[in-house]
Structure formats: C-alpha cells, structure tokens
Length: 105
Image 1 (cartoon, rainbow, N blue to C red):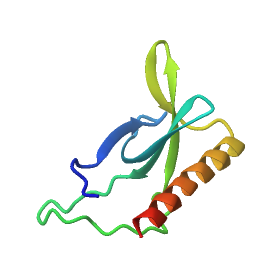
Image 2: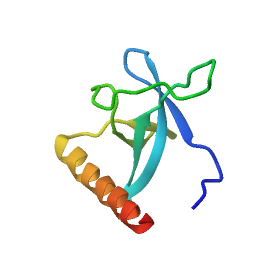
Image 3: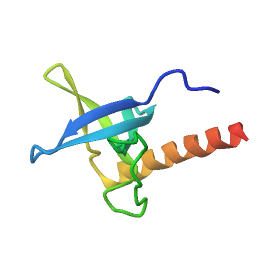
Image 4: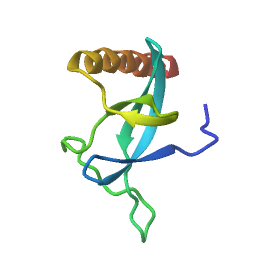
C-alpha cells in the first residue's frame, strides 16, 4: 500500500526543558488508555536532503512508548508508570508490527 501522506512528527519537552522530535509509528488502545509508539526523528542532511546515518545500537535511538493522559482538560504525553506496564504495551506493539510485516509478505 502506498503511503499517501508523510510521517507524523511530535515534539516533546522533557522535565529539563530539552525538546525532542519523535516520529509517530503507531497507536493502540489498551485498557482504556491510548499508547503511542515513536522513534526519534532522523534529521536530513541540509545540503543533500538525504537522511543522516543513525547508529541503531545507540542507546539514544530506539522505540519510545508514551501514553496520552488528560491533565486539567489538556491532552499530554506521559511516560509509562511501571516496567510491567511498559513490558505489556511493548509486547502488544511488537505483535502488531510483526503481524503487519507478515501480511505484507
């Protein structure tokens, strides 16, 4: 299936005020909560427009899972509350990713 639109990017700010741009890969609902699977955005070379090489083994690069929460009527992204919640949601995303991959073959 051809992708008609470009990727979705989200800018998040950590508690130290540092901004990070993340690319939205997928979302899922689980136990009434919306979870987002994101990867750090890969910057392109300003001259060529080609993506800059990324070391996939770098601890700063990898799947980021966040959840949407309501705070004073505003939707915010938050880290998960426990390792158990993270493991459970990670497994759900992995099942979806591998299921989609198998269907494409």
